[in-house]
Image (tube, rainbow, N blue to C red; front, top):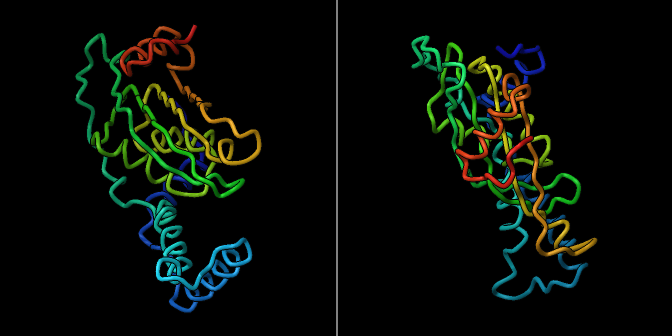
Length: 220
């Protein structure tokens, strides 16, 4: 079984928090003014029927896109394992994917988007299958980097269900590469996180990729 640490517990508490962000109408109006100044400076005419409310819509959209900071209290529910101690328990994987996700790169505040695949080998506890999607969403709907999202998902699973192993595979397109800088239009960034038995057993990693329909990425 994977060992947890205090940082995982703090991260788990933060991800489940019940307190939504409190942004007042005055603060929203102030942010809309800043956005209007940026847009007009960069050339957008804000005095047309379609653009007069653009700063307001932009700030509201940015707030909605980053709702992961509000946490998800529904992540608190876990169940006893369905595995009754049979010989294949330590090899039985629970896998969900592809789970679509969208995030904002914290380096440029530009979107990146893709798919996540999450798996674990249960020990004493399991979670409802929808919780794996919720895990991906609570960490991706923030300003983030792809590598850290995978680590945060794994940390949360460790603290929630204390599994024997965790696997997280993510692939994404990054608009900060496609719209600026090198302006590559087809790159796919792939990241993996292996914990517990997945870290030490190549056959389990290969089985995870096969179950996800990703045989071409099987580990050696």
